[in-house]
Amino acid sequence: MQKQESQGDGKKQDLRTRSKPFALQVIRIFSRLPKTPEARILGRQLLRSGTSVGAHYCEAKRARSDAEFVSKIEGGLQELEETAYWLELLAESRIAPEAELVDLQREADELLSILVSCVKTVKNRKGRG
Image (cartoon, rainbow, N blue to C red):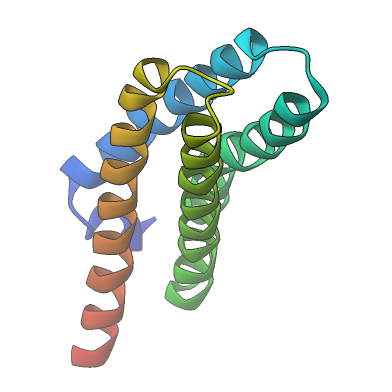
């Protein structure tokens, strides 16, 4: 689809190769959480939001318009922001060791930057056209 090609192959490739490992890392962290009620509640929220990012990207790849693409990517942004929040709560509540979450938090931040850049690129292109 032309709209994805014009966003830069680097960003497209990053999303393709990074969103799935991100989801897998979320799954692994969830599986290591304690079995306490608090950990399970926060963990389920993390699992839901963290694994949704790649799904939103997959939907965006099949978008029929720039508006639909932006909508799907913005959905992924919301999920990433939520994931970052659950990671913060897990760390600050000491339910999970902060050291185990640092890499995932960093990757969430980097993916956020990539998705924001994608949205800006499409919106700027649309404004010029």
